[in-house]
Image (cartoon, rainbow, N blue to C red; front, top):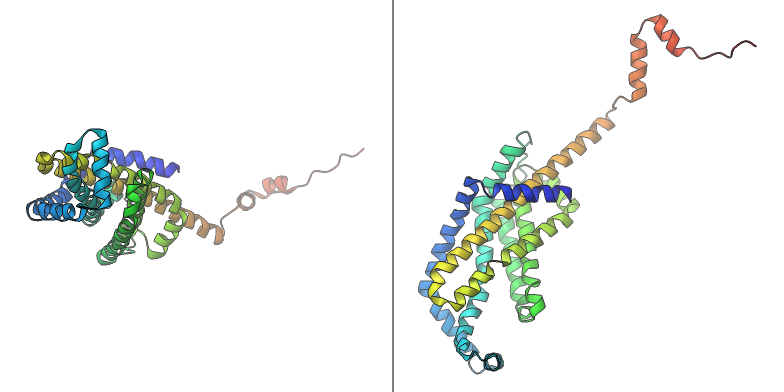
Length: 306
């Protein structure tokens, strides 16, 4: 827990580094291009499809009655757009995570390693393609979990719990793998994931909750459609910063735990090969003294003559 908290504050401080801020703009550029393309060619067709799907359904009837009861019938037309935003948000989150893992995480891990752990051996436990495969595999699994969990999003308490848990699990699996990929061996990575899975899962859940915060911006974009072009890039940049912080947090934590593991292994190795005990040192010192001094040290006390 102490290492996790120390890594947390260090990650916050590193977020103010100019290099980190510049790196956070790289995923933003990619996401902005994808967002503009979706807004230009996919937004209205998707909204029209959702509107047609809702027309005449029980869901639409219940929503209309709810807005009528609240006295805001003008918000009925916003429901299809809001639903599209809710469905697109997880995709943007996952794409941001992949962009951070691919573009930012290696650079941030190298920065943390060079500044804090310059003497930590790099054992190249995983290369680019294994890391990419790991990220894509877990991303597809997270997408499946998100699709399966959509019905729970309409239950007020669960909508605040289920998506952050899934994002947190995905963040923990992807970020920890990438943080150890260059420095840790395959055996070390497995051992550390097993030993620190509780801390890693906690970090993933916290970052998952932080990743849900920009959803407020998405909701604002759904209400203020005219500001969509401005609010959506802002939300994407916030996501990028959150994941940059997550990458830094995992980098500090993972590299420090790796250093700790190797120190423990080194101590165990020294103990198994025979480390001098205090008695051994004393005996060695006695052997190095002159015979008269050694005799004084080795002579047993005698009982006084009555």
